[in-house]
Length: 431
Image 1 (tube, rainbow, N blue to C red):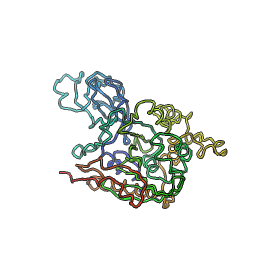
Image 2: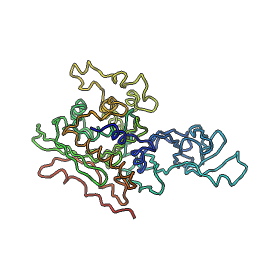
Image 3: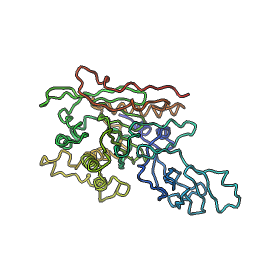
Image 4: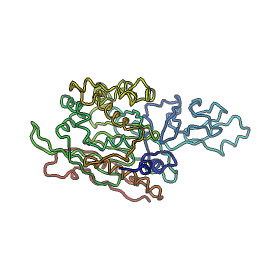
């Protein structure tokens, strides 16, 4: 359990909060690249408790601006897109994507624009995502180059949906293997009857509802292992599924080809980004794309129907705490559905959001099945602590080979689960 003070320290993400300052020390994904077209409309983005405007200029370059104009604070969401820059509609000040001031038409002095600079933040585009860094410029870390960033777009499937709760309670579900065979019972039963690689890798989890759980610290966070002794028509074996938590909000799934980013928009709103990839299959091309999204529950239709998009989040005509997530109790009574919810994503959302916008942890009762949860609390609070002391948080080092950080799964035999891990990350201290 965590008392109120520690829980607030863990969860609050604003710029003046300990966790907020720690989160700003990392490169984090903000939007899908596909959400911004060259010289298209500026898009307001809520990120770490602040509001920004993202925009792509005519040449395709990306910018993330503080929402309010440098001059008198009018929202740049109202700005005109003019090819090489965004122009505020109030007095016409125009800004390039890097913050350079291109024009101040209401100021007679032609040199004035050279003495000021707009509030733009460092950005990168990689792996189908727009990334931003909001921390001190003199502490900007290396950009993390994940192997899947170098794959063709056709081999990488990226999705984003929103949830109305704090980011920590969303991550908790990703380092909690014991809920999978229960909450997702229906999905796991269906998994055995499909040829989708993702589904086949998870179907056996239904055969052991109380896995042995272990965790081990790593320079970037921790590894979390679920060990299941399984006996079925294939015989007896011990299956290990090992996830990697990468500070501050990344979980690398044991399937080995899924990364999830749980990015705080505010204290009580979270963006959940999935990256699925394959070296050999074109996951991002139909029919495989549609089949993959349908099984997991990430199609645009599902996200819209369950209120997980910017246009539908919080609407009273969508599932939510106010209507018990439109849970189908009749299907539960008949045995047709364990949870009364239609799919994997909807079940996870209901479990996280129903705990409240920012979960009170003062009265929670952790057990042996919650090793990953306790380790998550420790890792995140450590990040806040060391940043407060003036040091770098977990994972902020130069020379990290991110190809050596991964989730994995296998039948153990005589091996330990630690033997499955990629070679330990080779790191050196910053120069």
